[in-house]
Image (cartoon, rainbow, N blue to C red; front, side):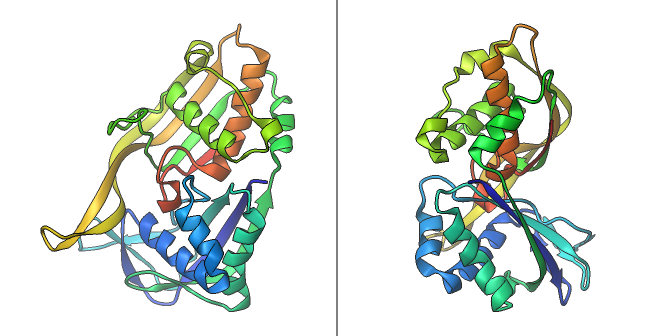
Length: 277
C-alpha cells in the first residue's frame, strides 16, 4: 500500500548544504533507519527498485557564498516528504519513525542537523487509486515537477530533458508494475500513450544534478555522479478517442506518482512531483 510521510524539521543552527541535497538526506535517513532496523535499512539500500522516494527539502533558504550551495536558517521550519511503495512499507515506516519520534533522533547532514518536530502520514491502496481514477470524466493532469526529474531512455546513457508524455508515464507504469499486487498489473503500450495523450508544458528548466559521490581511486578524491533532468509544470490531457481503460490507468499512475516519484534516483531526491487531477 503506497504511503507518504511528511517530516516537519527545524535546524537548531544555520548551516550550508548543496543545492542537490537529496543524496545527503538519503544517507541521513538510512543512518536513522539503521538504528531502528538494520535489516530494513539494508533492504532499502540494496533493493533493485527504489523502496522510497525523497522530495526536496522545502522552506526558506538564504544564499551561500559557496558555489552551488544554500543555507538553512536557524529556527526556520522545513518539510521533507518520503514516499514508500515497497511491499514492506509497514516495516520501512516503523524503521523511520521509531528513531525519529520515539528516540528523538535528528537527521544528521554533513554540516548540521535537522530536528523532527512533527510527522504526518497518508496512505492509499492500489485499489483506491484505480477506483478514484474512474471518477474523472475529462481529466487534466497537472504535474509540478518539484525536483529534477531524470528519466533514462531505455538502456542508454541519454536522459530526457523534456516532460514527454511517453517518457513520464512509461516510467510510472514500470514503477507501478514492479510493486503492485499481481492482480493490479497494468498493460499499456508506449505507442498508445503517445497516440492518445497530449502534453502542454507551462514552464520547465533543465538541470544537471548530483545524485551521489564516489571516491575516485585514480584521481584520489571524491567525485560526483551527475544526472540530467528537468523541473517545472506540465499538463497532460487526452484525445477525444482515448480508450476509457487507458485514460483511467493513466490517471491512477498520476496519483501514484506522488508516492513513487518519476524517473531514476528518486531515493536521492530526484523526480518528486505534486499532481492535481
